[in-house]
Amino acid sequence: METILITDDDGVCREAIQRTLERQGYRVQGAANVDAALDAIRRIPFDLIVCDFRMPGKTGLDLLAELHARGPQIPVLMVSAYTDENTEAAAVQLGAAGLLRKPFRRRDLLDCVMRAIHQGIEVRLLPG
Image 1 (cartoon, one colour):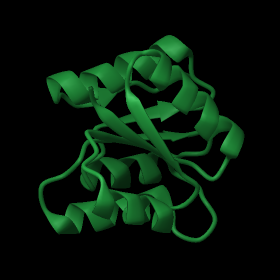
Image 2: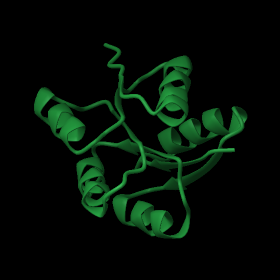
Image 3: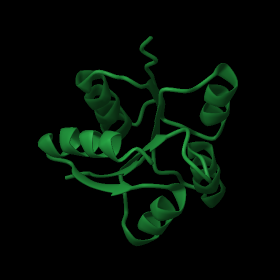
């Protein structure tokens, strides 16, 4: 059973993603910010991180940069309602496994998560 970390400052969104993934049998932990996510990563071996781009303080890109600097990466699926081409390009450069725009359909989330974890392939799904 895979373990996934959801990093999002929006508690409603974080919990909705968590419930969706738990219903599929994943073990899921939530973090409200990048510092909490980094603390969790030090303690728990995650198979995937689902991370929002925009958060107060450190951003999802800051988390990607920190993980990138550490070497072998945990796949990171970036999610956000607010992105632009430069932010998306930066995320890809830092090794994001995929990008998913909010609001997204439950099925799109599950497909991206499954591909990122099980196939180790790059996912580029940007619903419009």
